[in-house]
Length: 63
Image (cartoon, rainbow, N blue to C red; front, side, top):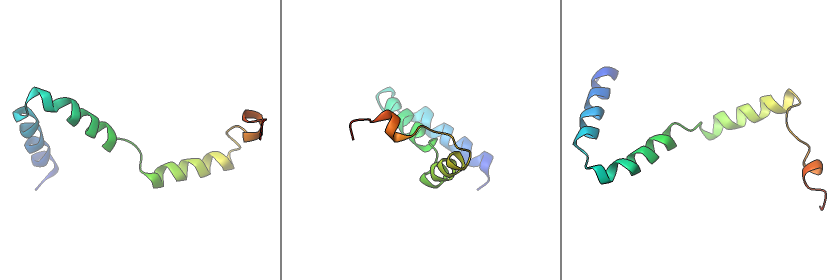
């Protein structure tokens, strides 16, 4: 199945959903659009190498 055909089928299925199911579908789509754990770890490692971020001691001085 090609990407365009798959997208059309998904859009048809969304159009058939009842209105009360749409908010949960929107939540699920938002979840799928989040970066994966691997992507977040890669970004964190790049940020550390670029010396970005805040030292935890400046945020928590009571520890």
